[in-house]
Length: 121
Image: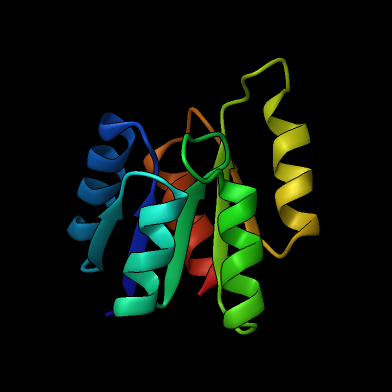
């Protein structure tokens, strides 16, 4: 089964995604921000990266740009609930422009997560 790296500064979102994905048989790794996400991916590449957009240290767009540059075939799902005065759709459009293959708005349902992951893979 595919390995998925979840990158989000919110531990409850990471835990929820881990639970959903592991119940479906996926192997899951976690990173708390984009900086750690890049390091994790370089050490042990995943089949899919799911990243939040707004995070400290290195945000999701920076993560997408850096990973795309080094790994052009990478599959990334961007997720956002908005914030910093920007709505989620704006953040997700930018992520798509920089290479995210799928987008997912928070809050999400189990069904939406699984459909998005299947489409991305």
